[in-house]
Image (cartoon, rainbow over all chains, first blue to last red; front, side, top):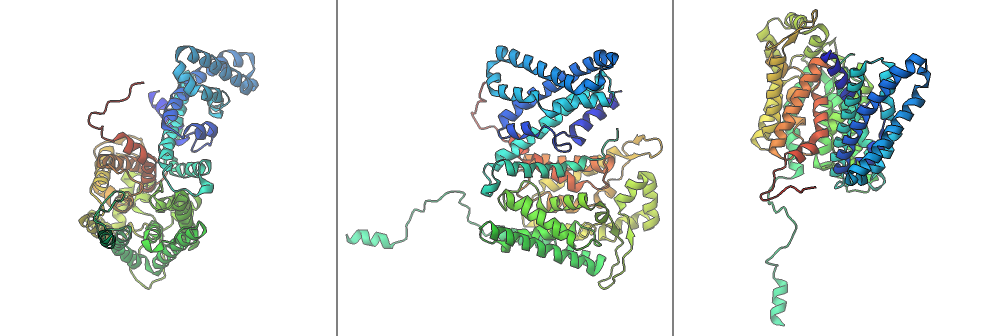
Length: 194
Length: 349
């Protein structure tokens, strides 16, 4: 059991890292990885939203949708669940921690339509994971995304000083860099066979 | 009037310039060519064991690296600096990481990716995030996995054109499992002491430059003596691999149980590209941390990932990917190991 969960965690964080091997969630990835500070804040927000939305959608999918035979509606319903939850989080954060809200509010809105947040519940549903497995999958994907963000932010901060050709400054070099990191992450392939 | 004139003709006593004010004979050029020189024994051994084909791979690789560097610098309007030796070294290192029997367009593609995309796009020498030669190799391995893992038996003749394919020691172990693989290796080499001797000299299948451990160690000793590299990364890297390969031990292919503390550290050190990677590629100034403590962490990380990939991953050899992955963490390591300034209080939020 624990072994299985560990495998799911490592597989979703490293081997099938959403950014570097599935190329999902790139808009947030490039948007917040310019500064370390925002990257760290984003990773924390993202991971918590990911875990909670994975749990919520698992509950709805297995307790409501499957008994009613509504499995085919999963994309629509998952988007609804995530959007509602993020909106709630947004409101709560604005009340509780205005400082964090002003830093991350705009990204919290971005998370609503993020592809990873949608991909995790869909993968959980397709793989017929149980509740703990679904939670681990969410946590692993969040950790993998955070790792990607923090690595990227640290390198991009260093690249600010680099003599990058003018046409490649900013986003283009960030895309090239992501490609190269993805090449390095290929080393993890085949590490675990689920 | 007279006095001012006199003062003008004298050379200025006080020279104001930006630091660092180090007056030394060491230049980029000198270091790059010295590292290339340190790779000379390995190159000679590669040419000896793998024949003229190896020589062709090395020459094509070096020429394409120099060509790619010159063309990119010309296009970008920078001064052409192929004489600084860094492109030469990249080309040489990449060729030493390739098997001898590959078609000659592979090193050209690898070098163009290494020089243009990995180095020049990021601003040239000093700004690249990844080791160019290793990115070149990783790309070739991903794109042409079959060609890049067809290894040849050493022929030990400068003129022979015969080539027999075989598996590397690590490949044998990956394929057959640790216990069976070891038996096969013993069959191949005769006795265990003979196996270690042959591996030290380089009489085994593998990439061009990785096989001859003796030649690599001569080069590494030269670099250590000249202080072009320090012990921190190579030794923490090698020690981690040695200890972990002993601890993790061998996995029984039938039951899947791992018997701990039974591994063979010497075999892990001598096989694969570990020595080449640890001394010549994990010590690249640009892509590793600056701080000594961070360098030790870097070496340990490389060792961990190497064992992880070798034992549990999809590839028989993990040194290349381990170094590339740790290259990603270089800025983070430098940040984490930064010494706290005296009297500096952490800012409160």
